[in-house]
Length: 162
Figure 1 (cartoon, rainbow, N blue to C red):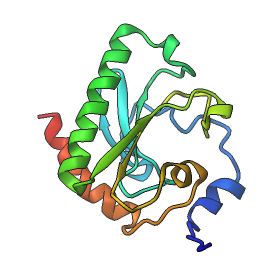
Figure 2 (figure 1 turned 180 degrees about the vertical axis):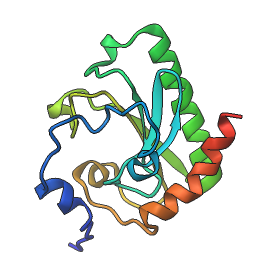
Figure 3 (figure 1 turned 120 degrees about the horizontal axis):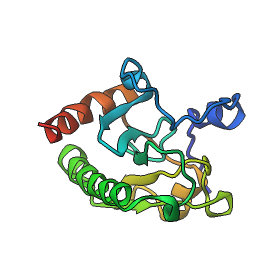
């Protein structure tokens, strides 16, 4: 068996966990680049996963701190799905993946790393990159650093808001 190493994830696994929710954003946008926020909409925002399973791993997250899809208002649900669709479009334009995994993990047993604040994952995929189970178990190879991925994606999301 061959091993693939994802050393950036050890910081998340062993590092201190923040006292506050990482998905609860301040109203100001001064930290958006540092937090890898790509877009702010009315009810949700699009953010890069800073401990990704694959290059371009994005999340669409409601501003409101809710755990479950059943807690979303109709407006929040619709806007989140709109931005899941728009994010899939951007990923296809920017990365040309052969597929995209889209998913929500409700609860720790379902794989939610941050179960307290709902978020929808979009993980670009290429034939032969890795199977679904390694994606879920935290093994992956990233050919591009986060700052380069952010710089590649940000113009696409800026154009969505025009």
